[in-house]
Image (cartoon, rainbow, N blue to C red):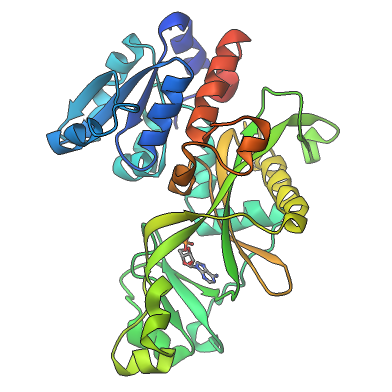
Length: 370
Ligand code: AMP
């Protein structure tokens, strides 16, 4: 299933290296991706459903695509594969693209795509994510298998929920029963008390300088590529982030109000500098483990985000990984306190385009696309 490296190389043979076009679905982090692609000198293509979407981009001429592909449904992208390839398009995936197409369709989209689509199999299930992250040396929140055993705050998460919709907090079995929707698959996790940091990393397997990730297992003794910290955010979640204004949890329950975790925006943050070495250790382990997930795994390529909570004992718990660009990198279109140290105005979107530019020059495109 999915596109194999041989197919990718065949497509790339017919690509005109001087007129590569960066294609992106117009949503999520597309302003950043389009802007970054333009800064690195690429032509750009926006893919959208509905004229309203297209019109909106005229408000941002600095990121407005050079060309549009207008569709009635995002799944029509699958039938446009040849059309994309004739225009030398490289698609940059983000959360909305994967959501609109579905994981299987996305894996089968016959167009060169930035990053390793194979890694999505590991990202798309909580159990597989856990195996991956724990093998990478990350500590995760405990899982409670039997709801009768809830004795302290837990968070109940639905599978496939986008942006935390429907999640709730329960203190005991009664709370759980009152709120749970048994028609949906759910996971019960220990509620970790602390501050959230969503850390945006970038892994470039073609770079031989900088912070080199050390391989493990079948890759022991090898340098796998360069790990960079691009930026960090915290999500704004409605309405849990503003709940405190209405009083205690008990007051809120009396008003029949339950906190919800729907993402509405993002805020820039930095973390205590003394926590950065541990952050790098976790990210390095995660990248190294990605190469050992299955026989012949191409590992993590490009941007990924470790979603963490830091306790008052200064310990990290990682509750999720996103193996692609996250919308939390959007506050940093003009650079971040971390990326500015290395090069100013380097957003994650631009870093993706830079990586494509460098790979074009060194003839390594097949190492960063799938
Ligand atoms: P997720 O869908 O896993 O990214 O979670 C959505 C939101 O729920 C996060 O941004 C956190 O605010 C919150 N959350 C998720 N897992 C936990 C946890 N184990 N403890 C506390 N809060 C959590």
